[in-house]
Length: 190
Image (cartoon, rainbow, N blue to C red; front, side, top):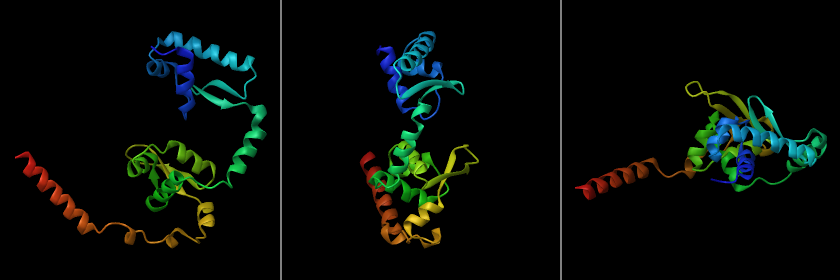
């Protein structure tokens, strides 16, 4: 069984929304009452140590937040980060959103084959991507590019995005390889 407080901190560091103590208890494999008490103790210790962050109980769950008194520092950091170059992961994610919008984070992740939560948060923070409603069947948040995206890309509209089809493999080649692969599997199975 992992040490409780560090395990809670590790889970809460990656949580992008408040998590209730019961879910945290399941994640860290400790009794819910023990987790609830540890969360209150952690919050009090961060306050006592005058940390730059705090652990808040909000919206029925727990999450880390930067302290209000450091808002100007955080704002300056975020705004200065706007000028930093995007990572290749951010560029790939941005391309998927641009060509498939509106698109859910889950769909982007399935296309890229990796978790894109952090990258999407970065793109939203930088104003390149925004929420555009919810998917009807699943309720997932849909994302689209923003006017700032078009501005930074030098586009008047999304219609000016380069055609991506010439960069993709020929559909006939893809279908032929699928048929060949299926025939090979059928032959190997018999």
